[in-house]
Length: 62
Image 1 (tube, one colour):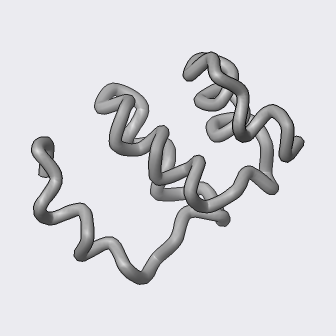
Image 2 (cartoon, helix red, strand yellow):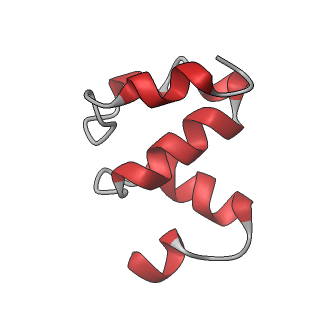
Image 3 (spheres, rainbow, N blue to C red):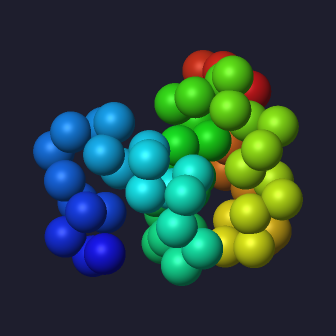
């Protein structure tokens, strides 16, 4: 799984984030930011970090 989490293809990383229960938190945040249409599904993922999301407030797509 760790090799897939750093795969150069963003589609592979996002599939991992959306479908693997042990996806790394950094990958989940990346998928959350990159995929607005899938955002409603990611907050229920148990691996999504619940703290530190204030860093996203300055993101270009808050």
